[in-house]
Image (cartoon, rainbow, N blue to C red; front, side):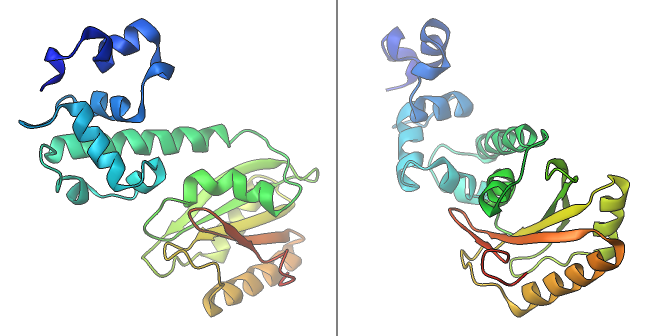
Length: 225
């Protein structure tokens, strides 16, 4: 059964217009993005199947690649790209919301400021929060992105950015796609290197956060800074 044969109240686009976006289920939202299903399933049914495969979790869905999505019958390259694009827009929107000047008082504040940028990635990225004397975030930016196992940061670029924004404190962060919260020897070494460089420039390294999909590790909380 295709969407055009459903009762008008069950058509996601019509439902969106009549009742608003909040009235739509997750599968209905996904159906609008896809536009159509396949010969056996409506877009809503196909959307429900896709979401069920990731335990109805949008974060898990965002980890699927175009090729992963194309394994579902009725999902071609164009539909798969539309789904991935919609999820990426949501991720970027969330990140822009965090660009406002926010007060960072502890490791959890730093984690929340960077969670949307780092938690769902399949490769490592290195980010930094630059703070003023009042511990307000005055700039948040990505510095590097790398492979599955590590992302190398250029300490010179890190501190040039800090100086450009008149920052007095830095919080660095990167993600572990593996889900492990244990810092590697490379993580410890780069932390020590940045800490020493910061002392020379009177720019304090306040913390180093390792982010996974649903948790984080703080060097400061663990007494490693």
